[in-house]
Length: 257
Ligand SMILES: [Zn+2]
Ligand SMILES: [Zn+2]
Image (cartoon, rainbow, N blue to C red; front, side, top):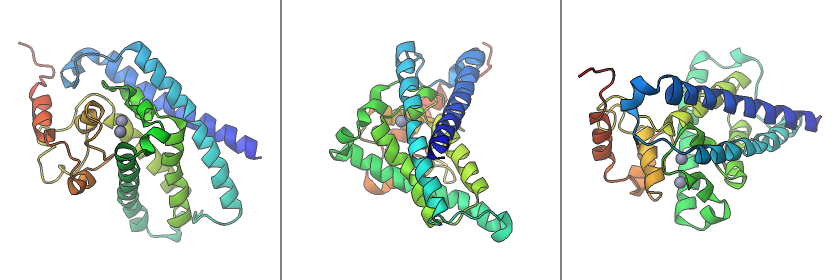
């Protein structure tokens, strides 16, 4: 049975990866290439060789979903997870609040392992250099990590399933949402509003420019979905607002001269 779970998890993770990243890439980098050209942060495209390497690492990293999937299955059988199957066992407000809470927890988890990877030897042990192979990111960069690093990131799922009561649909929604946010963060295109980096409503949120800058200068902009940890720890790139303003200033979508 465990083999079936492992194969199923690997297949599901690979289909999700190829479908979601592939569709985003096909839509933005191919079909809509012309009209969206102004939104591209770096006007150069990543090389096919680079993207090929990223797809290799992205698919290889799905092995971690097989490993963690089997552990989750075994833990579930033993009653060690806080998963519940009756969706109405908790009120709607609980399911709604769970999303931002999980995002904040995931953000903190990621920030600290990412911080340690850049500031200590952990990065060398977990081969974080694989993810930083790309300076000019594309959606394929999002999951291009060495399996050592990937295992630590995927482990977040196991921890939350053991600690926080949630329905499988909550988990599924969170998985798809974070996957999509990761693609947007690595997309290499900035679609967010002009005042995104400075508006009091959105300035604590991360964006494609924010993470693009991390791939240019690994020591700063370490957060994933938000950026409050970078602000607290002094790792926010001091040029972030300036670079964001420059990126959006150069956008001239669908404008004929
Ligand atoms: Zn990245
Ligand atoms: Zn990094």
